[in-house]
Image (cartoon, rainbow, N blue to C red; front, side, top):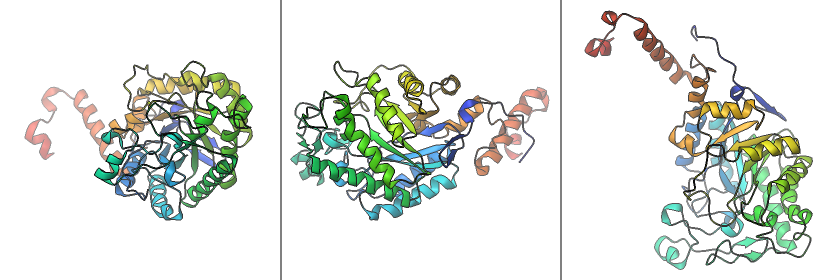
Length: 401
């Protein structure tokens, strides 16, 4: 394209290969709910523009928000779904656009369990009531979980799944995986964290069952493993599968990191390729909470699981500085870096990180519609620094030039 300085090696911008999929770099856009769908759960222009913009920003992998495997698996009426073939065309349009703009297209599957039937964040982010039904036509629906324990006092009391109900949910995950493949996604992530259905089987604080799905660690892991197996049956062998875990509950007597290591070993054995390492969220929602947290506060979870379960990991959580992200990958604490809200603030964060680390000094990894201009702007700036002051164009003359 043009004569550019040599690139500096950066681990963050190395290729990452798993199964038949190659990520162009190690930066991942984390799934982020937009609450922008209509009640049908179909993709609209907001989702298309939002996700395309993030692909243009230079990430190696861009995930959709979590896609509900059935209508009552949604958090809110504004969530996207993948519970019917009607969802495939819109999702395929998104996947094609992500890929056309330089990133790998990923999707996440979710069943919100006892945290379903909620209002959108700007309507309170609390369980739906008959008042929501009157004001916005958003009628509460029945929720499900491992046992009939609400997430918080006053929240919806979920119906405890019996074994027949568990089999139905497993079938929903398998069908959703098949639809995600038909829509053209290349990577799939299972949401097993943040107090949603899978997490409520894992945590002893939410699981009071006395059958083969409760009690011992082996029993509490059973449903999570079965979901992975079901999704793997519906997901092609050559495509990678990720699994998001709350690696710790952060509550006395809750799910802990040692258990996450044990589960990660089991998930690897049934075809999971990357552990997506988050934490918390069993009861109160962590997303809207204002909690003091240090950058990379969840990286130690990714590091330990990577080391002890011998499986690639993805680190997430207030990683906003390119040099910090590079340090995490270079130290072997994680294989991938997921950014979320920082990408909303700066959709071109991956490209800017490459600039900061010297991995793309010539703007060659940008879309040429942007890179051609930006490289010349940078050259002009450098020339201005190097030229004597009397030779520099200013004001109207510079604008005309």
